[in-house]
Length: 271
Ligand code: C2E
Ligand code: CA
Ligand code: CA
Image (tube, rainbow, N blue to C red; front, side, top):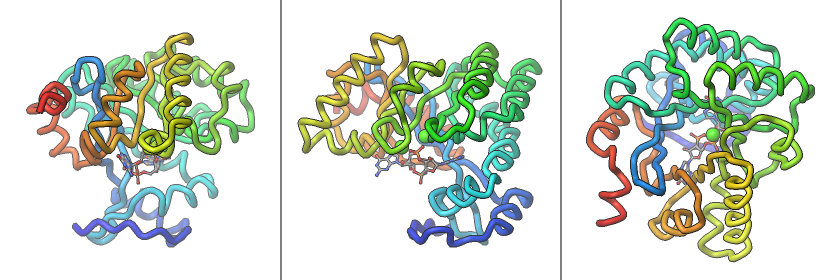
């Protein structure tokens, strides 16, 4: 399968995306997240891909339209059984890891996603504490009270909740105070700027202080160098994800990664 990453807006129609979902052509790749303090693999972010006649299509080319046309929630809900199946294999390879998936705030509001996840946890299909939702575009959610209620239901069932893309467009500190997030995920834009901009460096340092004060886990994405990794560690950031650690990979490769590199950081930082 030859991956492509072209950047035209909306190159596919809503009907094509729906058909991909119904035909089982959507799947996840997994990008590992590691603990900065001990170097262990903490889990992975599930990133959606579309196998379109052997060509891999990346989410930036179909998720924005899916979100605009209210198809994104259907896709997420339809993909949860596949995620649960993958998580079973991950659990067999290495217990106690956390798997994250992405959802936009508006898609969490109607209650369907919470129903599916709470039921799966009650049925023993998902271990409490083993799943995280990375919520994007929180500020665009039309009903914050309803969103908070749904978050509380998820939290009570043992689902972790991350405010995604902190430092980019639509994340807001006001909503951080109103919604019960357990994690903050710093966007790769500001993480990659850290090496060249002392301002970006100070902003991340402040976010790290803030996350310690409010008691949430801080995860940095877009870690592309040892230098960035070490700096984030010094700043007190908890977890890192990025190309330097591992690119998004098919499930089989991720299973190998957790089997053989579960102490990833210790091996690589010492090297
Ligand atoms: P995101 O949640 O910010 O995910 C991180 C993106 O950064 C991923 O791109 C990942 O491959 C990329 N990335 C990770 N590490 C590095 C690095 O070190 N350097 C660089 N330059 N990039 C890195 P991807 O897989 O193309 O996903 C793009 C966006 O699509 C995601 O951004 C997320 O917002 C959305 N997305 C992905 N999967 C899903 C999904 O299942 N549902 C929804 N609703 N959105 C999804
Ligand atoms: Ca994410
Ligand atoms: Ca991001």
